[in-house]
Length: 239
Image (cartoon, rainbow, N blue to C red; front, top):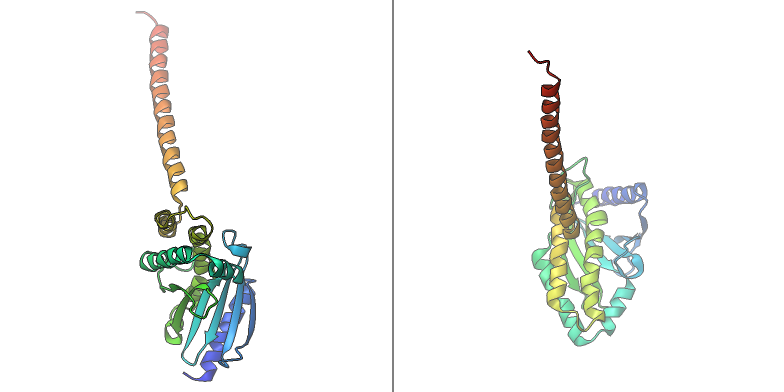
């Protein structure tokens, strides 16, 4: 693919980030010479530092995008015990097997599963917990909006959801891998339905309560009908 196409897609990303007021920096990577966009997602309340980061490297025929926790999270993992690190590795293995992130804007397109980024810990000594995906430009052009929404909305949200089970393994020796997996399964439920297990229980309780109220109203209606019939019979003139 020619350089012009690469530049067009780079500019589309820049325009999208600007229009959605997402913080980013565009530059050229010193080592590779590739155009790069570095993105900062704020208000990620469950994640270390309250932020999630991302980087996009633009190659000749594809872009390589990573979404990851901040440097503070990497330092936590780096300083953790080997036992705690091993549990995080096993949890990420479970996430790779069971989590399939989907994205929808609720208006222009339906919930769709376009990509399956892989979770891993970098082997460069930095201990970054991140995801990586390679997106061919030919595929990107089929679903440009869905692709950008996926990596700027669905993926940061997913990492934010996964932050409690991941980092609880680092700071609580009694926090078991089984419990972390259970928390990941709750994330899966939220992704599939958009409703947390707690919200589902409340909804079911509310539905039960509504049925009780409907039953009371029906009984009251029948009682009132009966009382009205009695009154009418008493008022009916005698022959």
